[in-house]
Length: 254
Image (cartoon, rainbow, N blue to C red; front, side, top):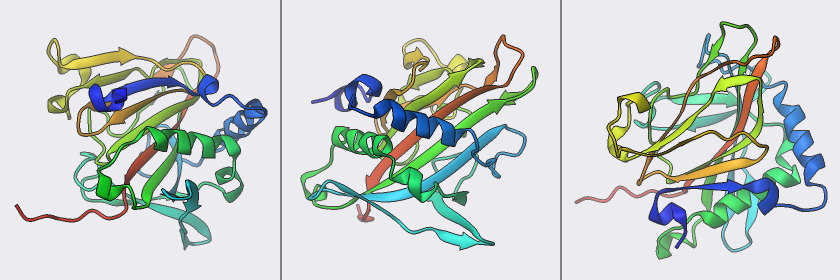
């Protein structure tokens, strides 16, 4: 039984765990791609940049099949829905610019997706079903000394997907970006509003591919806003977020 089952969260070092010939080159390609992410149109003034794509992991072949996008005004978009779980966008479908096809074929990205998948766990009857994977490329960017960049939602929360993993691509010249893991009952609160014993851990991920995962039913989680660091130049925090959920969710009468 892994830490996701027992405590509801776990931390990883994927640069060591996934080490293979060429990992540095594949990482550099992802790092370069993050430099030019489009602004998150749902986060006006919050200095957040984002792309998103969806896939299926097939349990028998252990392969990744990328799902099609929709095209609007010549832009490839992927839809994302969190139902009631994001208090800033309750019940809303959001559409984000899709990740470019050549990046989806990046060997490191695919290894990260499968490494995360192997850490998830499901009921026996669900193990034969494809698992839906949501891949978010998110950058918080602060250009000026008084800028602030904010993740969504800006509180302890649960995502609605059974498992979510976060993988640091870059942290440069920023203050903040502190992660907190709490009990489910403190969702919608800030860490400073919680009581003793309601937070499991508070930490920062600082090194390339330093990562963590959460079991959504067992914990809530949060990352604080960032501001610019001590250098007189832009700061940024770039992360790959990957969520996993069943492709069929039946509504059962009680």
